[in-house]
Every structure is written in C-alpha cells, then in structure tokens.
Length: 588
Image (tube, rainbow, N blue to C red; front, side, top):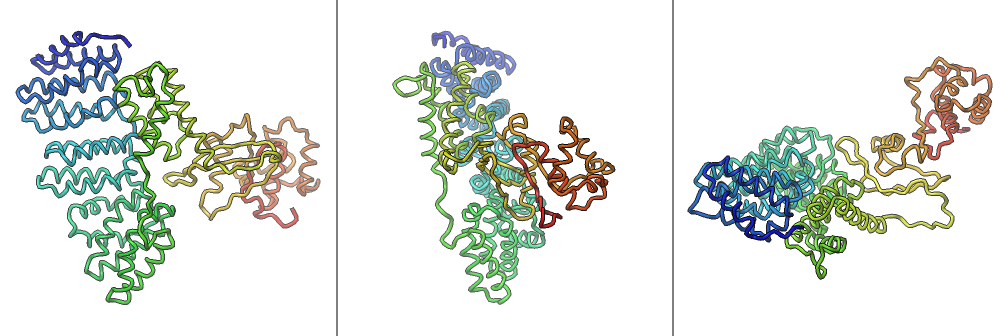
C-alpha cells in the first residue's frame, strides 16, 4: 500500500471545498475518490479524507461545503464500491443530519449519498444496517426520521427475506414513529410499514396488510381488523415474520372489552396457530398469547366465548407455546460477533496483523462488519453457499489484499465453522463396519415458499436401506426427485453416484410396446443384452407370456414391477423407491 503524504490530498480537498457548482463539485469528488482507490483504503484515515469530509458536512457557515461533502461521499461509494461499505457506514448519521439542512441542494445531495452507500450492502447485512438506521430514527429530527423511514423501504426489493426476518425488531420502532407529533413523520412511517409488510410470504395476509398497518397507527381500528381476519380462511404456513406482525395485534384484541371481539380473536388465534409448523417459532412468538387466552377461557361472561378460548388455548399449548412465556433462546449476538472477530483476525494474512490485532484502523472497521455477518451465517447454518460467504467476507478483504488471498481467507473461515457445525450436529457412527459412504452432506430443501428441510445431514452407506417418514404432502417425493435431478446442494452428481428413482409413472412413455421391447428400447440400457433383460424380468415375476404383454395394458401393480426390473438393470448406486409397494401384491 503506497505511502501517500497527507499534503498530497490538500489540493483535492481545496478543489472540493471551493467548487462553485454541483457539476464541478462532482468532478472534484470523483478525482478524490479515484485517488483513494489508487492509494488504498487506509488513506481514508491516514490522509484525513473522512475527517475532512465530516468537517465540510458540519460547517454551518457554508452550504457549498456541506453539499460538496455529500457529493464526495456519493463518489466514494460509487467508485470504491462494495468493499468500502463498512468504512462509509459510520458516516451515515452525519449525512442524515443534512436532511435537516435549509438548502434544497444540500438535502438532495445528502439523499443521493445515503442511497449510494446503502446500495453497497448485501442482503445478508440487513440486520446490521437496520440497527444503525433505527438508532438514527430514534435520535434524529423530523426530516431525518422521514429519510430513515424511506431508506428502510429501499431494502424491500433486494432483501425481502432478510427484511421479513427483521420485522419483529423493526416494526415496533416504525410503529413508534407513526405517533410522532410531526404529520410528515407519521405519514412516512405508515408508508414504510406498509412496504415492509409486503415481505410477508403469506398470501392469506397480503390482502390485509393495509388494515394491519392501520391498527399500528390507530388502535381503534383493531375490532375491524379482527373482523376481517375472522372471515379469512387461512391455508398457508404461518411463519415467524407473519407472527411478528400478528401477535401484537392479537394481544391488543385479547384485552378488548367487547365479547364479540374476544370471541373472534380466539377463533382467529386457533386457526392461525394450527398453521405454525415450527415448535421453536411457536414457543417464541405464541407464548405471549397464552395468558390472555387463558384469562378469557376462565373469565369470559359468555359460555360460548369461554369454549372457543379453551379450544384456542389447547391449540396454543399443543403447538409449543408455553404458559411460562417465551423461552430465553435469543442469540447472544454480541458474544457471537466477538468470537467471530477472533477467528477472522486469526486468519488474516500476516502483513495485515500487528501484535495480534489488525494493522490498520479501517481494517478493524471492516472486520467488525465481517464478524457480524459471519455470526449471522453461522447462526443460520449457511455453510454451503460460497457466493454468500464471498459477499459477506471475501469482497471486503479484497480491499486489503489480492483476490486470490481474499478467497483463501474466506474459504478458511467458512471451512472452520463448517467443521465445527458438522462435529456438533452430525450423528457419529462406528466406521469399522459401516461400509462405503455414498454421501455425507448437509443440505436444505424448499418447495415454493415452504421450507421442507433445514440444514439436514444426509449420510448414506452402500448396501443399506433407509426410509423416509412423513405425512401426505410433507415433501417425501419432492426430496427424492430433487436427489435424482441433482438439485440437492452438495449431493454427488450422476457421474459420481448413479441415482435412479422408481415410481409409478409410465405416463408419456410408449405403452404400445411389449414388456421386453419396452425395457430394450431404453437408451440407457442399450448395451444390455436381451437375454439379461429377460432374466431380470423373470426375477420380478414376468414369465415369457407376460413379457409379451403390451405395457399399456398392465395393471398398476405390474407397472410398478416393470419399473423395479428396469431400475435393477441400471445397476444404480442409489435406488430411490417412491411408494414401491403401491398396487403390488404381498408376494413380490
């Protein structure tokens, strides 16, 4: 990293400070940003670039300097790109303060700078960035608050899932802004909450988002909202983000004096809770409802209301909710981040470390963000998506070393945590006689918006039989098809592990052929001699007469036997049998 004298930047600062027009200020800002890019990120600190821009931004006597500072931050974001995000993040409060500037051009420049900086962050950083924005929301003046509320909306499209995961923490803060004395803030908060709630992946709730948000701003509208919800047939799975929106509403409704509102509320709760499939989510989000429902079940004036409440209470407790309140299972985010930081420092290239600490002050800021993102990835058990790890770690390290070493650094950290996770969750079995391991991996499986399996270990030994148990529609066939098609992350490809699925599905194939000709026509079995095919068919019950039968005329049971015979001829490493005994008699 070249050693640039502090005085070298002085003319660049002066050109920026004295620029009489916005275009000239942008030209000076771009030259400054390119010089920073040329000399390395630490010059932002060593050459007082950030300090000088902060000085310009807070100069109450010069609107030119304030505008130029905002333009410069925008140029730094645009030219330095994503690696500079953690270095520019601490400047957001100063830029948001400029939203209160009397000059329209200064406010416009500050808004553009904030947008440019926020665009640098990946979806995985949403929690960290939101924390900074909420701090500004709670301390800023009214235009600053409006700016923050608008900024929150900008994350909805690029980071929908991440925003949804933060609704429980974020919405109470936005709801507080709805009751601000400034009408502009209140209006912006309502718009922001409406936008944030669109991240709910629940089609049953989507039509009710406006009335749900209205309940946040106006508690008097709770009865009308409950009435609308009670007329809704809920069929989609209810997840944590949905409960983050609904539970505060339900708590208010449970305390309503109207017996009709209470009746409808406990009915809605009963219907919703039946669709909460994750016991951990139920314990965390539904436990606060238990006391209110219990109170109605024992104290409501009308027997009908008490009966509905008793039913809802049973459903709540069965789902995993507790009478003792939510479990203390919240993450120790600070502790996890500190631990991750130690791991990151331990993997730094030697030239970036001095006495066990980052050699450069701004590198320490970059590591702080990396550590927070790594802690989140580890908590989510996301180890397989290397592109995500590069967005959260590698891209920031590329600012301080070459791309190859940044990649090695990132992979070392990912592998470190992956090994720890495997040791913690993988079932240990004796290796002396278990045989050849066909597959040993960690994967997740989703179907549409439904998460079927999350960070599940799949370990298969040659020659063993495994069963997949689950209710109808739980995803058993989906899992096997994904395995067959090679769509399960980290599962060996067909070139390494020959995987064949057997199911009752001859639709679309030529049913006019005889049984023997049907098998022989399979291109994958072109090298198998007909006598061998005949012998295999005999093994599963097809005598010579039946081998001459037309495939289209076979019963369901014989079609399944035909599929089994064909699968055996593939000599597959892994046979996936989807309900193979359906339509088959007991003698097969």
